[in-house]
Length: 559
Image (cartoon, rainbow, N blue to C red; front, side, top):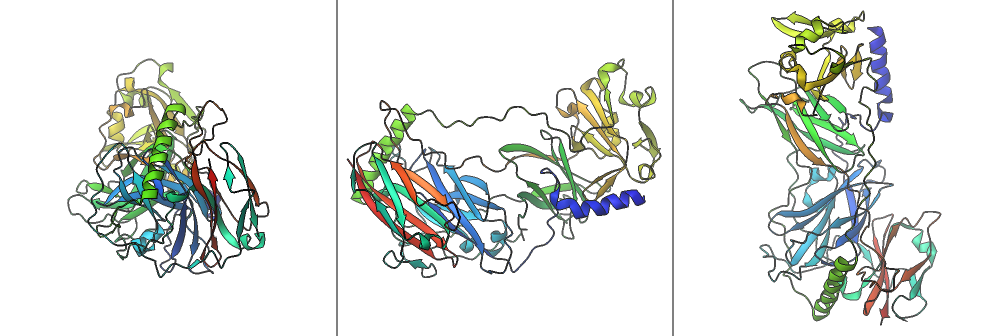
């Protein structure tokens, strides 16, 4: 027992450097921590089917506070309380870069690109970052109906240094270019750029930019749920309640399983029945199974999983949608380019990772029992009575249970972790009722096993033949969800044609974001003009250490 206690203490010390699939307990919620995000996009006018390129920097309003969150949630929202599309982006050095695809089904109208952390949800929607967008669907004639209307106005709370006052100058070698010419851009007075924590340079059609400052939606409706900062990566939280009484089930065991990753994470609910699993850096859509401890027959546990994205407030307001003559002309040109892009360029495809045999969370089992190595027996219990296995069936309180054989005292004190395809099974009778013909093998850890705050008397994992949980009838407390983790998109839409026979139809010619104070930051950039006759704006946007926004721009023409 002393040995297991030593391992337990050692794990608590080393938990911060455990593998990527291990849960980190996030038990501290700093009520005073308030984060702020500055959000930039490559432009403000888009066509459906395009990608919105964005960049953001996160910082605390308290300069002495160590940055906490590692995940930013980005979504596009519309009037009518709808989230149109959404992404989760991993923060690196307090910054993110990413892209989000505008669905073809969007209706022409105003939208917001919104960014926030889970911790910011505790302080209300007004603390989120917003960028107002105009999205055009040239295939549909209808417009979004706007319920809550406001006129575009300057936000008195947003500090912007006018272009005439900042000392950052953008120089180009000439003002008029031919198709496919190289535009040599240089940044002068680079000492001023070094003062910026984030710099974004965009080259886009002049009238695809919104030069006015949009008033941030004014409302304060903090979440009723107190969210924890995501300090290690994406977390999944929620509450466990009793279906019969609706009361929270406190200090109850809860388990999260990722079958494809052969992973299982145990945890406990807290004093109000809430739980929090941290899953760190994972990508794509994955299936997750939740199971809970059932302490008595009168209790029926039910999982209430928190929404990963914040809902759209009902009182959010939008301007009346209108396009100037120049915006209509620009939108028409951009729509033609988008149609040509769909003809000449194949849709973005992402190389799938080669198949990797994922090791189970318990690494290599001490014993693998392959059912094909034995004659077929009539029942599951026969395999434990007729074959010499390191597991036996015992009776306790008139019910059959599994026990791992061995001399360790912990094997007699703690129950083994019982799994079926890496999903926790509470009742041994459920396993013993399965048909042996549906099981491929059993993987056994024949010593005490420490996982998080839990000590198990070994592990017994039953692997089904068809990865179908052997047709078991799960307890009502078990639920499965498909969950979206980090997106792999990172400014994917800027495709430049090098073939003269293929038109260069980029609507955004250039988009680059970087830290101004980085030692290897470039001051000169070569940009290739496209095949679209247009007046373009080169705009540099930045954020200084005080959170002030810096802007500088210049223009050129392609014809």
